[in-house]
Amino acid sequence: AMGDETAKVYNVTLKTGGDPTSDVRDRLIGAGFTEQTAAQATTNEGSSYVFTSDAWGVLVVIGQVDGAWTANYTVTSAG
Image (cartoon, rainbow, N blue to C red; front, top):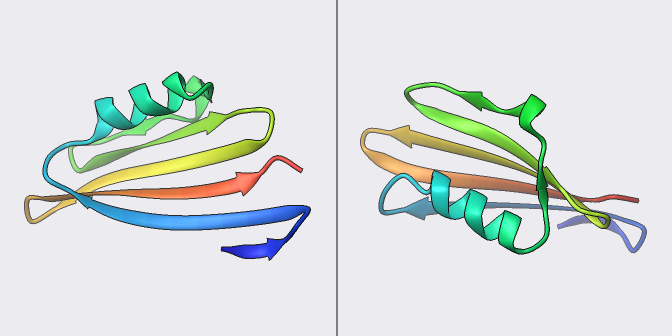
C-alpha cells in the first residue's frame, strides 16, 4: 500500500490455477462494484477491467504466461 489516510493505493498480484475472469467479475459485482464496460480490453493472452464503488476504484489485469494465470489488482481510494 502507498499513500495516506485520504488517498490510498494498493497493488496485489495473485497466481491462479485457471482463467479467473468470471470469478473476479462475479465477486467484485457481488461486493457492490460497478463494472465500467467502456474500460474493458480483451485479447487471447488476457484482459483488463475497471470497477468502481463510492469508495474505491479497481483495475484488474488478468493474464496468462506459459500456461500460468495471474490476476493483478490495483485498488485506489475514490477520494
